[in-house]
Length: 304
Image (cartoon, rainbow, N blue to C red):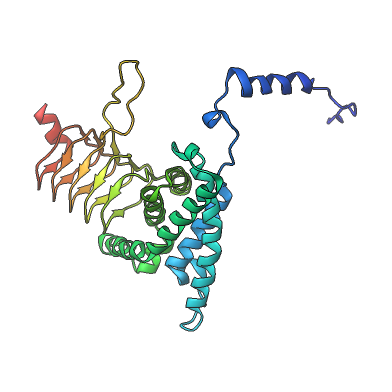
């Protein structure tokens, strides 16, 4: 038998909780950037930006399927204008968390955001060119792919690469906080985690994709293919004399051109995978290998 809830409004002693939370925020556990409240970038707005940019880059796939030769440029122009107006506001918010923002006035901050957004827009044709090489690599590299349209609409690795290339450009132009948020959106949607600072050449293909991790200082050449659950990570994390992590040092692998790394392989440290090499599934690799190597689990066991 079900019983109705007591109609009496419960009392939570909210005053005590609210005051304790204020004390935590303002005194005992204060974590605000440079001690002040900042206007954070909006994840919802960034999703809108990514949708708009994807539509600009591939209008009939991510925009409107009924576009014609007469209407497509109008659609691209209107979508791009709307998207850049949202993006520039998010860039400005992200700049509030940059190390050098304290030296900028509000007017200078706005101008910097406009300049970054303008430069980003100017690079969109080049970004699309590299993405087309990625699409072709996916289509040619997967016998299950029946068309480039299928690759664009159905492959999570392609979405992750599109978002990475947009994020990497923003990172390079001086909007690292925003770039990191875009990478996290891609990670949430695809299960693929690519740091926006990583450097990745064209004709890049991630097949299946879930669980792939590419670290901040990784460098990947042309025509590289990764499968699911591949990690290009750091072997160790050096600290200074006070035990604080040293950030920004080169600690992730260099993968040269024409390399294939199969599912579950873990490649750690600042090592080099030589051009044309193949790394087998589930290999744990912490040492460089010369060009045209074929590394498998059995070989690694024999070497030990």
